[in-house]
Image (cartoon, rainbow, N blue to C red; front, side, top):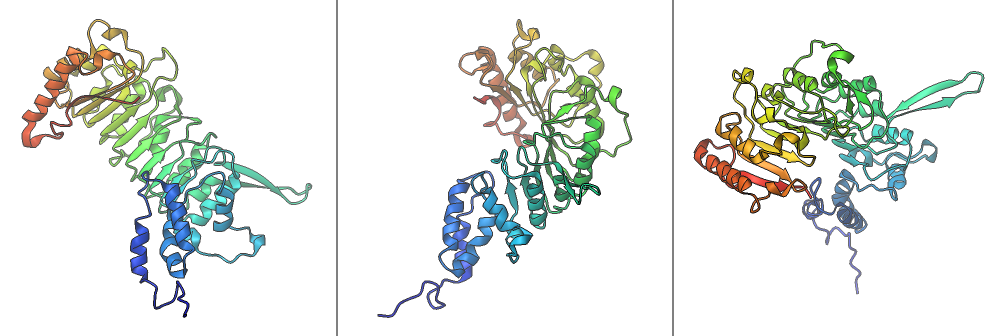
Length: 408
């Protein structure tokens, strides 16, 4: 009886059909079981040459990298020169390089070498915790010592197609001038998360942002006041940045943002750096007529937030559509009058005329919970009624309007 080969030309499916089949094994970024899909794609590559051609691109497009397979991945993508291995072209297939599962695996020089190899097609990069930064290496005899500085930022600046850059896990304080120099070369970058270590000035950060950036997360500590630490240079406003996440900032720092980010729509403020530290917004939100979605810790609120002084009467009409109150200590100003009552008054008196949604963290007092508080029920009905009255001009449907809870 004749033996039928699995990869014979007569029995093989067209490559287009195989590519269509394997496309269902590639989960979208941030969804699905990436590890299981990688194992399946790896098995497909072993079936035949046709299956290999159909699956290898998806296998290396978004590799699932852990401490167990990192060294083998690096050896495959960028083998040592001494190994005399012919280039296999797999580095050009990598579009997403997510190293957030690594802690102390590898080295800084290896991270820089890996970035340099996959730079041509890389679109998404998530840096590891420990091995991202600069390292100095020595060469030559002790008498004539030469010091070379290998930095991951230099390799990062060559990734011209990068759209998403996440440095939030990096524990080393990076040199801000080096980081700014690398960021200036990433013209297609639209998402950036800064490292958590280090201390920078707010204006210095604004100056370093790429011109096409749309979302920025600042995880590091900001200097206390821009007026005492750095001058206010002439900076071209960033009209494309619409989403910003900040650590807790003081009032003067927050006011300065309006000048440089005139089209900011989504603003998230982190918790205070220390218990009892000043981070109140007072009425500073009224300098931002463009903000539509605001998330902040409840302890940042004061009575000025919902009842500003008379000198704010000439302000522009607020576009605020949603407020999310994150976990924290309830301010003393709201011990007698509930926040729900304050929001009700702010909406009905025209302070926040466009507000339609209020989110409350589950850890806050039960007085915010629907079904347990008359104030929350009344506010929920008011916001839904206003959304219904908006009709065709509504920016938010009635189903999405009202009071809701989030978090755990």
